[in-house]
Length: 326
Ligand code: 13P
Ligand code: SF4
Image (cartoon, rainbow, N blue to C red; front, top):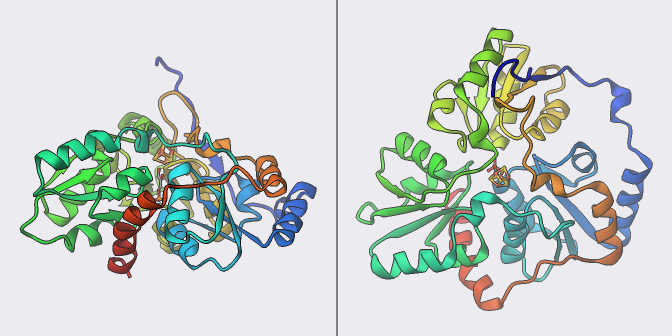
């Protein structure tokens, strides 16, 4: 792309009146009570969904919340692999995903058939799978990790086993550098996070020189090297709160800004741009809308279902993760 480049969107602290619930939000709250449902939402969901969720968090926090859920129905506002994870760890609950098409390009980059063939040829491999993968891939893995616990998990893998890390090569590279553990990396990446570039960050930093940069580990190494902090979306909340600076550049999916505005209300956030767009949204995360949440509560569908053999096999590495990351 040729100049002029997009200018980063700046989000100053919210005014109190901007937080009032809409009529649709109030209707969804009533419906969820009527249907004994809880709403779990990822940090990348749109603002009106985050505003009525029972819990908003990263993949790790959502997995723990799903495992402990007492309500009979979980409305999962995130992407397909996250809703599948909820079903795997809490199979007696009905799990609804407002839009079944809400997938993940990273999860799609790793097919169970290909992974099974590699494992058959190299039975010595210990497969560490990032949670952004299908239930069938989880079922073939030894342990699961998220961006919030990946280093901790990799450090617990027996030292005599060579590791195959699937499917995010950027997260894998970051973990390998942090832990010093060599790993074979699956050649997958997140289509959204790899759109951040060093040049876009340099331009943003020039416009906001006092703002530190936080970035998600799914970003490329060149982008991560420019960041003051690299961490999962959950850890970003605590890190931003601790900063002396009043303004922070956030290099991840733009929905994260809503969570930060609610929980770190005194600061201004700058959504890191790409070379093409003023911010960066995941098209899959944005498939869920509040209207679809309302519809799925009324219709009690679309529902996540899994063959029990796959669910049981996927539960083993997921429970191992929940245990290892305590
Ligand atoms: P978190 O592990 O921070 O929830 O990130 C999940 C994700 O899909 C990032 O693109
Ligand atoms: Fe998948 Fe990337 Fe979207 Fe996360 S942001 S759900 S990794 S496509």
